[in-house]
Image (cartoon, rainbow, N blue to C red; front, top):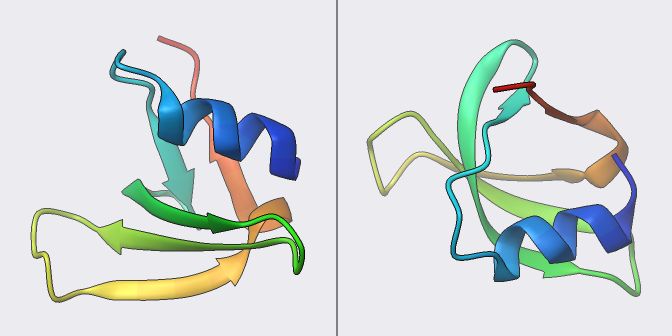
Length: 61
């Protein structure tokens, strides 16, 4: 995924399925300048990771 798509998903009111290494995640923040995103893994709000946006994959609905 690229930074612009990650930002669009983050800003969207729609539920868009995104995965990191095969696991569903929620995008919580996008750092466009550094190409990074903070994501919540699964349903635990404390389980967050900051990763390169290129590692995120949008899943077809």
